[in-house]
Length: 243
Image (tube, rainbow, N blue to C red; front, side, top):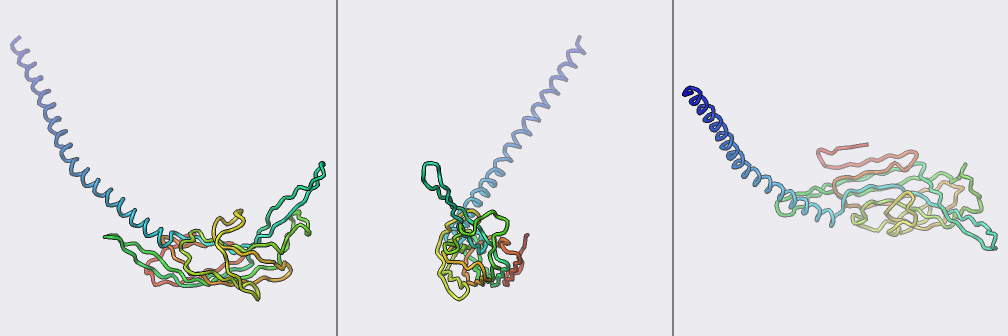
């Protein structure tokens, strides 16, 4: 009985010793987590402050830019006689993209600072030119008399209009027009500039314009032409490309 009691006490002491060690280890882990959490909290605070500073600069300068077009949108007005004697008019649009499109220019990096944070932006000086081949709506089941060529729009998509630095004057054939903010039709282009003009669908329509644009993070071009070429120069040492 004496040996059994002694063995039981040893086992109990061993179990208590293990519990004590685990408790001490747990306390040390909690103590070590405190400075770790303080460091993580500081990192999160700095990241939040940095993101706010960057967002402030982007909002005043211009965010990432996506350019699209130009596109010619032509209304098709269909009139339908109803049994009650009235006429129902329906308007839809035909959209034509250029046969060829060329974009060239310079992309200059610009550094802005807020407190200890540094943000790299860009200023773009672009020249856009191209042409539309004769506009023939083949295979669209549209009556020629319903196409309103004299009420067409030319539209150029710019994702962030805050970045536009100067008026955009488009040379269309032998005339020059000042593009206006906003797009009348949102089927293809959601935001940008446009101008209403009468289109001669039987000829090649040539266009050109210059664009002074601010942006950040990204400059992309949607391939809105049968043949499209983009040629940019920049002193930035390590650009990256996609697409």
